[in-house]
Each structure stands twice: as C-alpha cells, then as structure tokens.
Figure 1 (spheres, rainbow over the protein chains, first blue to last red):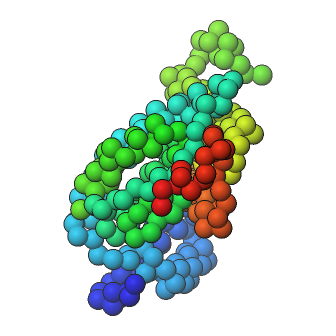
Figure 2 (cartoon, rainbow over the protein chains, first blue to last red):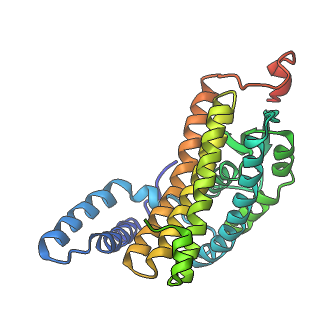
Length: 166
Length: 123
C-alpha cells in the first residue's frame, strides 16, 4: 500500500491538532512547561503515525460515516449484551454444550482496511465467534457452536458495516 | 461499611448510585462467567471466546458504573475514553492471539474427535 502523498502537510496538521487536543484534555496542566512537552510529543507522534490515522481517503463524507457509525455502535452493543448472556449460559451449564467449528465467511461487500477491521472486531466482540484470519475478503472465523456460525452467515452484520462505510 | 441495605434504609441514595450499583454488579457477573469459561473451556480458541469479549463487556459495564457514580464532569469524560480504547483494543488483542495460533497450525478442539479435523475445517 503506497501512502497518498496528496494533502500530506494538511494530514500532518490534522493529526497534530487531534493529538494536541487530546493531550490538553488529558493533562489538565496549562502552563508553558507542560504544553511545550505536549507540542514536542504530538509533533513526534504525528510525524511517525500520520499514515495510520488517515490511511486512505474514504468514499463518503467523514461526518456521515461518524453518524452512521454511532447508530451501528448502538446496535452492536445490544448484540454484545445479548450474545454475552448466551455465552454465560453455555459457560455455566453443567455439561459444556459446545461444538466448535471453523468457517470461512466471504465478505464481498467490504472494501478497505477500516471497514474490514471494524467487521473483524465486531465478529470478535459478538460472542460465539472470533476472527482468526483475514485473507483478502475471506474471514476465517472460529465459532463455539454451529448456531453462532449460522447467525454470522445470515449476513446482517456485514450489511450494517457496509452501510456505514460504503 | 456502606452496603446496599444500608443505603436504602438510610434513604439518602440517589438514582445514579443505584445505576452504578446495578452496572458494576452486571460487570462483575460477566467477569465471573468469563473466568469460569477460561477455566472450563477445552482449548485455546474457545478460551479466547470466554476472555476476549466477556471481559470487554464487563469493563464497559464497570466503567459505565463509575461514570454514573461520578456524574457529568471531566473525570467521567476520561473514563469514557478508557471505555472506548478498551472497546477497540480488547477484540484486537484477542484476534492477534487467535490469529497467531491459527497461523502456527494449532488444531482446534472438536466435539467428535473421530471426525478428521480436515472434514470440519472447510478451507
């Protein structure tokens, strides 16, 4: 992956501003000494990691992505609670009724690092499934029971993530 | 010592304290189940199931409880940031461990050991 050289000074500046705001928010000391340390640290980190924060320009406006992401987060939290209760029941049942399997799920809808990372983390967070590996668009997933694997295969979560990013 | 019954009998409890107590007890419950799962599950992958997300939800609940207890101020905002970072870092770490094991070729535990692993892993 080649870093986009377009708008490079702007992206450095944006990273620096975000980091500096974060520094001021966390530090709570607003004298010359602490702020100058903050400027040094933020400059160093933004020099090293601008490509991580703004790796590729998204296909949509950022604030729309953010808004839809918050809605998705609400749905995801609900799924996490629901599925954690299911795993708690599995764990606490006297006979351990698990039947693990590994499936390969092809997420064709998702393009780009951020969408795939979001989807991979969402799979891991909804209990019963863990992302083992991502090869191009193939997600290798370990499922505790075949029922959890079926839940993933119906594609609801992939649809949500695709709606946020594309 | 300040117990739940003490709070109720004293009559000076606020709604945010009740929220905090409920959330933190919920968080402790999920910590409990994920620890039990860590001990009971048979192999690395299924143990990652127990710890990777039970812990995430538990920490989220406990941090939310602490936010309820603190009310709206700068400390709560910092607690919220902790929750967000754990929400991102915990599944990523789980995935990193599980992927390392998968690429090293560690075979998952299967219920019917007489079935060949190759028949179950359709790749």
